[in-house]
Amino acid sequence: MKSRLAARSAMQTAQWNGGISKDSYLDRARRVLRIEATAITALIEQVDSDLAAAVDAILASRGRVIVCGMGKSGLIGNKIAATLASTGTPAFSVHPGEASHGDLGMVRSEDIFLALSNSGETDEVIRLIPFLQDNGNQLIAITGRPDSTLARHADFHLNAAVPKEACPLQLAPTASTTAALALGDALAIVLMEARGFRPEHFARFHPGGNLGRRLLTRVEHVMHTEQLPIVRPDDPAAHVVQTISAGRMGVAVVCVDQELIGIITDGDLRRAMERHRRDFSELLAGDMMTANPICVDRKARLQAAVDLMTEHSITSLVIADDRRLTGDRLLIGLVHLFDCTV
Image 1 (cartoon, one colour):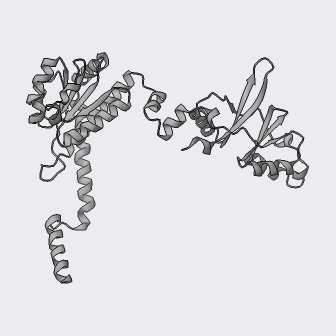
Image 2 (spheres, one colour):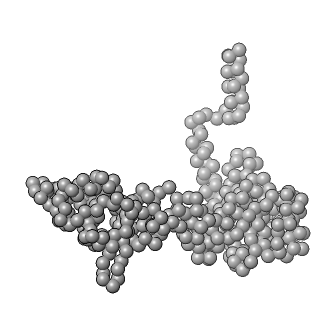
Image 3 (cartoon, helix red, strand yellow):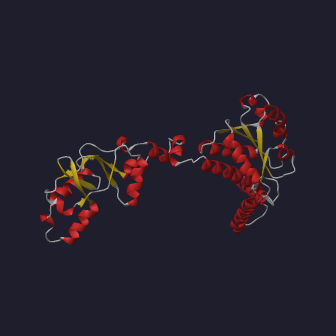
């Protein structure tokens, strides 16, 4: 029984793989990537003034971009709509079949319709054209055929024609969907730059991610304010080592009362030990500290703190309150690089 099952499995495998050897898998995968890369490269010459005009139309519109496509084009449309929405252009996708059965009620006259169809003849999409014309919607079409019905009725046509599909049978949408996706990305990014979309705007739409957290959160929300590793300038080296170890932040902050004088890092300790191997125990905190340490305001964005720590190759940052009249800097807290990650 087992031998018959094994023989049947081998026969099915042979039928599915067409008899190709495992040695050719990588070559075939690379062929697919070359075909799709060629398709993307061809778009550079195919893109024309219609894309610029489509950008102007979307920027001038007070409505949303509604993306529509059937089958694989619909899946690509979902991604394009998501990219538009997350980069500052209000957008959502609608299924063409559902649209013609009531969902067109979501389409306002000021909305711009973006339709995807490689052939430009997809029935479910073509059926929507009369409504869009009567409703006053501008239509952007992404197709692989500039002479198709959808392209001819569009206000703006983005040509996604490809020399051939990566599918050896020329049946499964592969290079054509890649080309449509790339054109959608190009449209979204041009709009993003035209709107002056900045990282803090991106963070507002991605508050759950690490980037969103760092851009929206302020230092005061995560800083340590209790049991800080503080030493005085005249504290001995042994006390400094003990304070850094107990604080578990890799630093000791040198203060007189609350006034910030300097900082001693693990690196400062090691360098002091190397320079003063015989008399290290006689050193004081003031001998080892770095005066005027890098500080950040408590109201600063967490991302600003991360940028400072990255720029100066440090893992802890002092939070200080500048007293401009006296020139003093008062210690408020500390933030560690680990505090800035999710």
